[in-house]
Image (cartoon, rainbow, N blue to C red; front, side, top):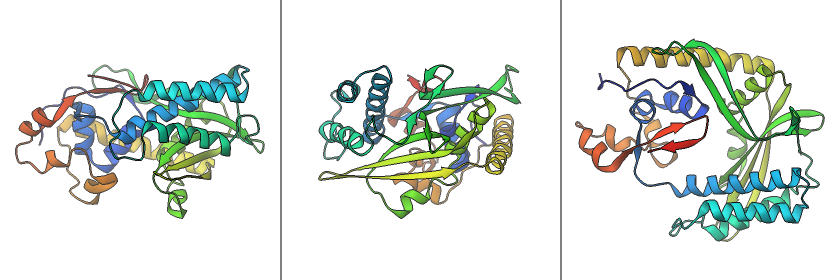
Length: 299
């Protein structure tokens, strides 16, 4: 048993669902108690700045700017978003991230990219977002829980409508391409598109590897047929039911297995290694509430 939680979130997104799948205790600490490890990851910071640069360039181009002007605006936004963050010896320094944006548009030019930004509801579908009520009620307010998300763009390619998601990484290869086929995040995009009356053909994932001496890119195209979307949604409802049961009982189980070491290691690993986690939480963590709708943190 754990200490009494604060409140169950009214909005869920794919990253929150993934944290519960990996470890209910991680979900509890991060999204019920709202603890976050102090400091900001270079990978998250650099990736966020890169995404803002891509968004600014695409919006500028869709507004009628020449590709060179649009790319310049994208670089300006990336530089502004990156700020004076210290990258140390990491490859994702500000100059390397600017180079990555330039490399991206050399490989996927705004004007000749075969994946064309789609228009949805009369607007370019850049940073396309959604928030859809679920037939599951919040345990306290009684309001429908919302499932929300945001993809970098919706694009038209080869007669189909795809969600486009851009990733930065340190390594590309066959394993990178294979990891997306059953990624819930992307199936969730397809479910949202279908629910809102669009016809999803699939997901395009573009990766750019950022090393200290070079860049590279790969593109994965994943089909999202109806049967896969239906299976994902069935699992979604079951997963949320498990979350609510954990919330009702206060019993957020510990995985205590390989998930504790994923992606370097779980940010709550040291907390779970402690018989008394409170001193660790007060010393090395801070309160931070993630808002999936605005994609902002409130400390």
